[in-house]
Length: 368
Length: 86
Image 1 (tube, chains in turn green, yellow):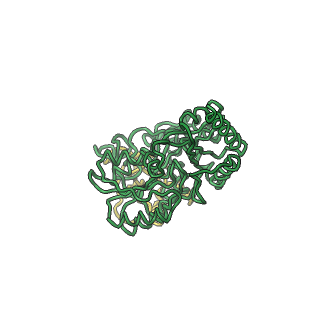
Image 2: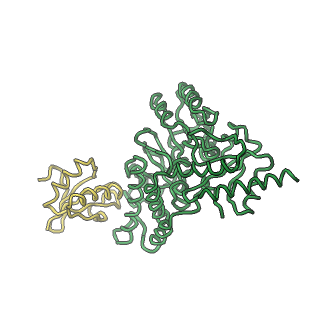
Image 3: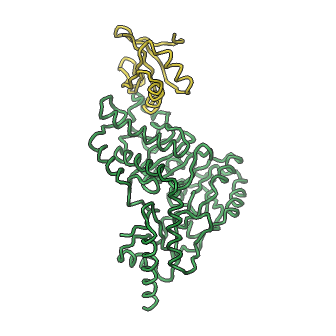
């Protein structure tokens, strides 16, 4: 299979990921609950995970919270910062993992910056929106539909100027672009473990610049005489037995990413390989501020085209990609797009094969 | 032998504290908090020899490691240490 759906999850992982998960299943007990060797082995895995992530994302290890996925982290962050009816600024490219929690809370949402691959417009719109002193802001680092790299560092600086707490959704950037809790001064940064960090599904990270409110309450193995959650991170928001095999796999994913600082350049090269072979004009091609995600707006039903690619052994994603706001901003809400997202293991031959196959499918469709 | 115990509010903090001691080649153990000391319920302590206690305290201070309380164990009994270690 040619796998070009890494923006949904990276299917191909380093071999060490599965090996570490197997070891954890065999050797790790429940962390933070006992003093025996199996519990201590589990404790060591969790600390390793926090330390590796902390080093990569410039965050103190105890402020690295292990989550189920980015959605879990975003819900924790948003529900900690936003009260019903409060005003929140978001970018024009947010995922439903941001929009649905905000709407569920009854937040009053202002959308700032809807022009793709135009950081000047993005920043001007954000400055205008922040001038109204909203209660919080949420911004994706990279659009999961179009690959647009938003100027998050500058947006974070604006948020600091206006004293607006910022949540960054690093779902598509963690592992390929620099992400820094300290430098950005964010309230929270959420990310999945199973995409650009090459960990297993069911893992994610929330970097905490503030102390969040728990979504789940329960046992932590600490301060157990109290019926309220500890106020200390990470225990405060890590109730219950964690996904230990997942954390062990994520450690290896983080090591893989740390050893390959050129992943963004590789993904961009892969998109160039496709573009050269495809040879047609592409509407959603950014100039320098595009990560390894490419959306194609093609004549015909995007889902039918993706199905035809699947039948030819090529895995892509079509439709709205759980980001209707981004499609609304780009004017593709009614058509959707076909999205290609290579990973560290993609090859130029795979990208050229995809271009050739897609060209054949489009010719067949136009001959119907 | 007499031991000192430093208690922590979370295992993560205790683990990080232990790393500092290990990096300084100090003998220390991460243990569950003895029941007699667990006023807040379950938790973790770091145990060091009495001879190393002042150096451990100094390392924690230098690295801004926040422990909760400290105790000395003598002859099977624990006593909280409220003032400076020497």
